[in-house]
Each structure stands twice: as structure tokens, then as C-alpha cells.
Amino acid sequence: MTKETKLAVLIDGDNIPSKYIKEMMEEITKYGTPTIKRIYGDWTKPHLAKWKNIMLENAINPIQQYSYTTGKNATDSAMIIDAMDILYSDKVNGFCLVSSDSDFTKLATRLREAGMQVYGIGEKKTPDPFIVACDKFIYLEILKPQNDQNNGIGKKSKSNLEKITPKVIKLLKNSVSDAADEDGWAFLGDVGSLILKKAPNFDSRNFGFDKLTPMFKSINQFAIEQRDHGSGRSKLIYVKNK
Image 1 (cartoon, rainbow, N blue to C red):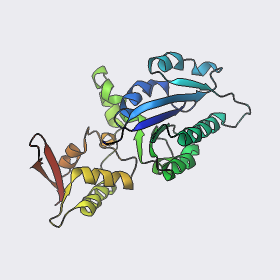
Image 2 (cartoon, one colour):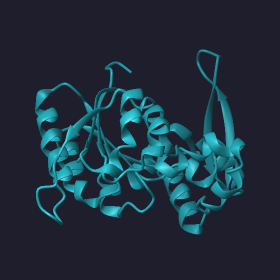
Image 3 (cartoon, rainbow, N blue to C red):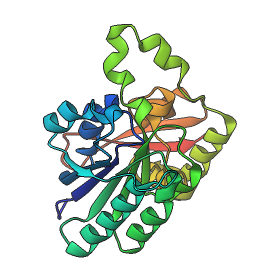
């Protein structure tokens, strides 16, 4: 990576359960350095009190936004205004918008138009328009179970996994075909990037696989081949439709 990816993490405190924050912040570091971390909400409300220790532990800056009018979401407006201010400050080159609210669809689209990398993070109830407006969308539910499997929650989390449906297999096969060379082989890294462009919420962890390679291996419609890397220290994975 020639240029460090600096991320602005903006969290809708009214819309995201606090229990996911630790795992979520760990996930975000995979994509860049969170240099700006803000969470928005009306901190005078008792139900947001549980956020206090979590904000301190993760160095997240709380932004107070009073609910001026019943039925109006002032938190959304504050997040959107801040996001645009940050965009024009040139301090970051990417955003993490943490919410399950479709009100941020236009914001995600606008940030991408400005050349920003946009990661969406929210629950599985998030409406599709917000999901597809992001470069990548990560479901919060897949982050927590990984650390809870040894606490007796593993069986419950498995029941929440998505099934590999014919629609999913078609997405995988078409992506392999689109990225393949004349012999039908495609570098798995290119296939993964192409899948995300077609379906930003695609993640092998949604189906119970830590990585894309074991997911492809589990489906008896693909051939997998390991090739030596130039340095000889690692293997490159290639995939082909059978």
C-alpha cells in the first residue's frame, strides 16, 4: 500500500447496539487507520448511558445532538454535516459509516463520488439502498459470534448464517468467468474484488467461512489451484469453474 488509508469512523449511536463496538473497531483496522472516531446521539437520554465506558475504552469522541423535534432524526443530520466537513478537510481518504439506517444512502453515494472509499457497517436489517451505496458493507452479526463460539453461543450463531443458495453460486461462477484468463483460471484476489463490486455486502463469514478460499473449496463446482509466488514464500490461489 503506497498511501496510508486514513479513515473517519462515524457512528449512529441511536441505531447501533453498543455490544458490537470492540469487534467492530478491530474489523475497521483491517481497512485502514481510524484517525477520526465520532459517535452521535443525545447523551442526555438514559438509554445511551451504557456507551460511556465503551467510548473511553475505544477513544471515540461523543458528539452531543439534542432531539429538537419529535419524529425527526437530528443525529442523522449531524453525522451528514460532519462527514461533509471532514471530506473537504482532506484529512482522510476513506469513511466508515456505522448505521443500519437507509438515511445515509445519499451520503455514501456523495462520498464515493468525491473519490472516497466508503465502508458501511450495520445489522442485517439494513436496507439494500444503503448497502449498495458502499464499496463494502459488513454485517455486525458476523463479528461477534467469532469471539463467542467458546462461550456456548456457537450453535446459536450457526443458525443465523446465510445459506449458499443457487443465487450465491451464480454470483461466484459469473465472477470467476469475468476475471478468468483464456484457460479459464482466475486469481482469487481478483475474483473477490469483482464480487464486492457486484454485491458490497458479500462476505464469506456470512456463510461460516473465515476466508474466501475454504468457501470455494466447499462448493463442488470449482477447481482450486495453488501456484508459487515469485518470492517463494507464499502461494497464490487460482480458481476455475468446473
